[in-house]
Amino acid sequence: MAFLTAIQSIIIIIFIIGLGYTLKRLNWFDDKFGKGLSKMVIKVALPCAIFLSVLKHLKRNELLSLSDNLIFPAVTVIIAYIIAYILVKILKIEPGRRGIFMNAIANTNVVSIGLPLNMAIFGADSMPYFLICYIVNTLSTWVFGVYLINNDDPTKIGQEKVSQGINWKKLIPAPMIGLIIGIVFLLLDIPVPHVAMSILSYLGGLVVPLSLIYVGTILATAGLGSIKFDRDTIVALIGRFVIVPIIMILVIVISEKVLGIDMLPVLKGTLVVQSGVPMLAVLPILATEANGDVKYATNVLVSSTVLFIVVIPVLMEVLQYI
Image (cartoon, rainbow, N blue to C red; front, side):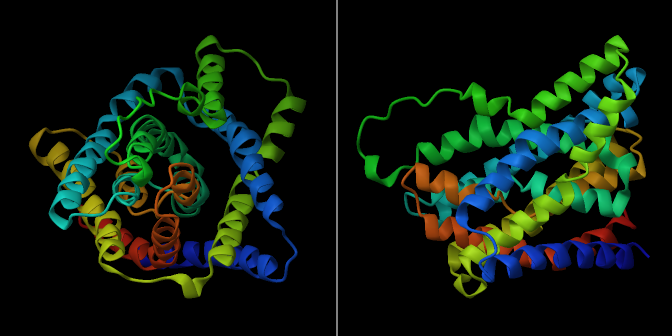
């Protein structure tokens, strides 16, 4: 049953992604449209959706237990970084790819694909647990992941590196602000007018379709024919779709069997599914800014976005035995 549910959810997602891909190929959308769509989702729709989700699906007495669950994805990401670093050294990955490679394994496209996938499979009740993954992934990406890519600039090899520091603007992006404001409203029990709730609901409802259409435009721009399975790409895909889910499953099993922590099925399901989500959609953008290997970044992004449709049903099947 879980396998069929995952297949049905993926069909819906792939259909909307395919719509974005087709319309882009028909030149309905130019490059500016894709950038505008991305900004619309990240800066307007997603903050509204997260704000509403906090008020609808969280209770004040649940906030402490929710924060306790941050440890599960956090431990998984830390171990993923360590393994990715070891693989970089063993495989002797060239400068310009190292930061991309490590990000490809440790961080995910939690907004464009992770959110709609989780909503399709587990429903709105899973949103509080999705927020856990979102928080950890956001901090991991903008505090450490970007640092790795920026300090892997092949044009500066051998030169004295200037510390990049923490980009506080990216550390607290609009979706995170929506989360913070939602928690404040929840804790202080601040009422939200019905009209405002309706507006936020309409805007928040745009997240899933617009996000998936955006992914389709990315695939159309990169071209499915550009996918190449070289050594570095294959290892990155194994890391993202095999190693990281195994780490997450082990974290869950050890937490329950050894430490005696009781985890809700929807929490376990969300953690496992999010561990198998494709790579960051912004990888090529980050690579461009750091003079990295943009073709490699695009290749791992496109290939992971296509292959995840095989991974998720498998993870849903594995969930039955955890």
